[in-house]
Image (cartoon, rainbow, N blue to C red; front, side, top):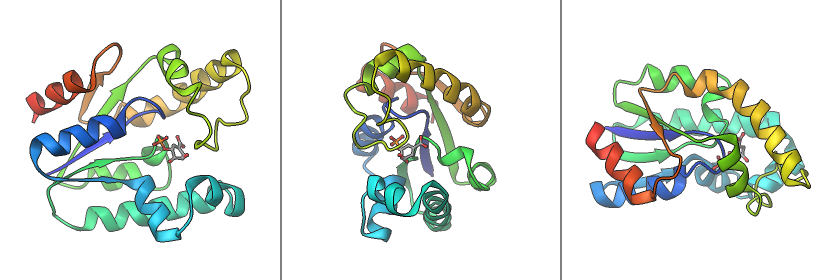
Length: 172
Ligand code: S3P
């Protein structure tokens, strides 16, 4: 089985995914890291040098490659992965995939992202907390349509990484 985590930037996909993989004793893989390896470049540089459309193309190629294997693993998607190309279809039509949405309020996401903007090209230009929250509210509103098609929705507000991990394990 492939346990796939999706949700907005900053919702905890990476930390939860890491712990989940340790508890289940399977590999942990992040789409962003796979993209960086394939391109031999950072996410920031890919956005800056090649633009977002190029990034989305590589993201789609990497997701395709990752989903081709039937290996048991935990996969953390990028925040936008289910929202572009045929990625959601690839995930939903794969019998090995269980897709989890880590849902968090724009307010909590803002608090977590305000000091984590540097490595995130979509938001690093937003100077104030107000501007960041306004952006997240709109962006999340557009993206929820995709996220909500996950197999399971986990309320990630005010929960520890351990609690979230346990919640997911109990749903398997
Ligand atoms: C993106 C989220 C990032 C990364 C890229 C684009 C997005 O991943 O894929 O910066 O479109 O939301 P994280 O959610 O891991 O920050």
